[in-house]
Length: 237
Image 1 (tube, rainbow, N blue to C red):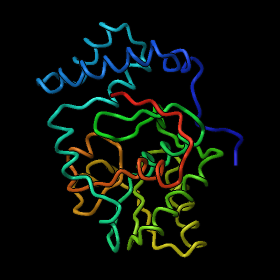
Image 2: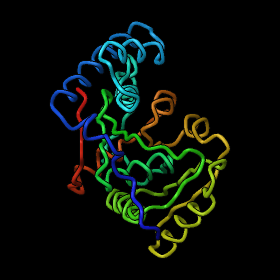
Image 3: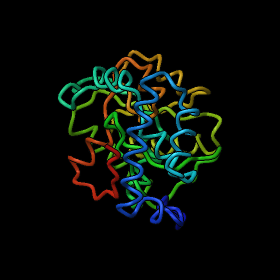
């Protein structure tokens, strides 16, 4: 295991750590929701709002992740399942999305609760996934959720084009084998499309997937509550 984590970027405390900056972000999310609800494209809306509040690049990234239109929020809520509805079901999990978000959370990076109740971070994989100190703990948290809710089967779906995706797939399968978990893992060239078109329950915080999938579960929200996780959380509403 390499001695690295997925914590805050230098400067994140200045961007998100004060009441002034937090107040600005909350107002920006309200404005963004207003624009999206009235049909503005995300890029155009975030440019307008970013200019108005003089947001830096990472603040705009947080703004875009946290914002959604009234219709998106309503429809995502309609498709969201409770943990009591997961027993004996098959779940498809957006592998890198969930893994990186949990690694960030466990590394005390800032986590943003969006208008849709989903949690997102500011990390990206930029074509290569690198395992970090918190990777195993992240997988253990998913295992805890899987066992407590008596899920029938969990399928981890990873982006095939991402470097090291094959290794992560093998790591997940090895962990499942050691702990007697009914897990599968697969590599997909276009995992977003694959997950969106699946008839099974989806776990992801990717906005496009949430808008297009049949049903989904808010795993990060569940884990924060059930496992009493310490989170550097920013509520944007």
